[in-house]
Amino acid sequence: MALRGRISNPVLFICDLQEKFRTTIYGFDKCVLTAQKLLKASQILQIPTYATTQLSSKLGPLVPELHPLLTNIKVVDKSLFSMMVPELRARLHEDGQRKSVALIGIESHICVLQTCLDLLTMGHRVYVIADGVSSCNRQEVPVALERMRREGAVVTTSESWMYEVMGDAEISEFRQMAGLVKESKESTTLALQSLL
Image 1 (cartoon, one colour):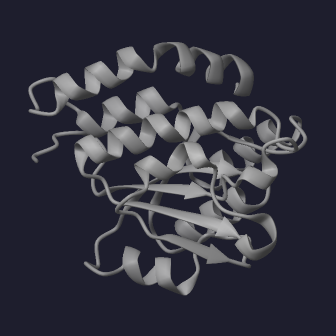
Image 2 (spheres, rainbow, N blue to C red; image 1 turned 60 degrees about the vertical axis):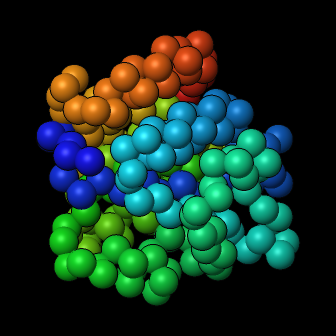
């Protein structure tokens, strides 16, 4: 695979999309739709993906909709709010290169925010996917997005990030990616309307 995109060394982080939060997080199902789309994109483009759960013994596993797409992805359980637990820190630094991390999940003002701040402190570039993050209180989301933007993160949308990673319609994976965009058009619209 030879991506020619503007984003070098892309990585996808999925933060705590657990079943227990389905009824308490605003627009939760839209976050799951965005996560499904980005997981499929990451499989097509061979982008490393990491997922976490928050205290899974109490809060349960990731939502079942994601399970078929996580076959080769180890889900790391944590008590920290940030995803930057020792295991994920080590994996990000295996090759010593700065990563461009796309960040989705919950809650935007707690775990997503603290993960973003840690990644920025470690020298990585962070792309917060606005149609893939939320919180219990809807009003927390724009405040968190603005804080992350001020700290140096790029706030963008899932589709914009996908095309920026590809960078060129001549790559061999483009046909599959265009099919994914078409297949997820309705869910993308729903997520954008709900979460932005």
